[in-house]
Image 1 (tube, rainbow, N blue to C red):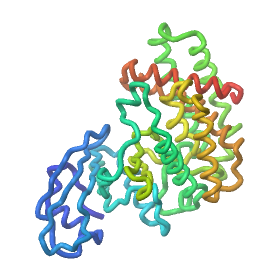
Image 2: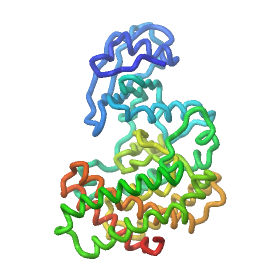
Image 3: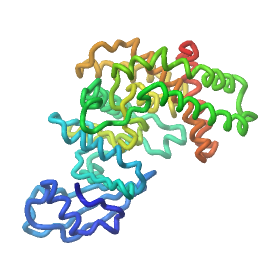
Image 4: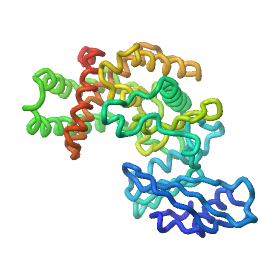
Length: 365
């Protein structure tokens, strides 16, 4: 394992030389220096790097790099997952090629060094646009995002290495005990939220959340127990899958769409990522305009099938989407409880609650 890069100041030319050499990217020569351009990452230290090499370095050395440094234990699973990806014989085209990753168990610090694709790719929408209610990418980019997500899910669909391999990707609900613990935590969050915010919410909205909390314990036996016990129709989910996590190509004829920031990756129902992507910040009007939501789900489903996923019907996908709406309608509650302002969580709550009603999720409770 490489020495962990704990800060941008710690990334010396000597250390970068050592990392690139260890990973077969610098056969001769060395790094003389580098231009560092910090990136305003939301929850980590990140920067774009342009190394300067000695003249005897080979021509194909990486010219542009990107480093992400996580100074909490949150980067552990991401580093492990990227290691799992690199061990696959088949390249995953939706993943940015990673050069090096390291995690320090004692300090919790980790780093991930990868190729910088910012010269050829861009985010389909910015965080500012999403928060302003303008979070719908243009059609071609939307298609690329949905198909990249389907490609990730299809590759890992019921993949035995997720269950039996040397690297265990997190499984949120390994058993009933863990599921019920999460249900109790959500119930307590809702109780605290309700006591402070109920006056600002409609009666219908309060009833939606009250009935949901009451019914959550029943979902384990009815819908989830068999799935997790038998590792059925599960895959790797991004689990923080907003459009800001995608990088779309400037020229789709040359490059494909990438997914980034797999810090929350886990083994779960693939529809969770679709709920993040579609229902969390799209209004009812945006979802329904030209059947945008259904078209996204259809495109996703067709991509799964075309990539070899079997024994998963369209009805299965729709039910999973509804189940994840039931589960993730709680997101604004968590946001408020963790300090987010009403300007952030209120629009999110409205979007999710509208989708919850439109899909008649209460009928599954």
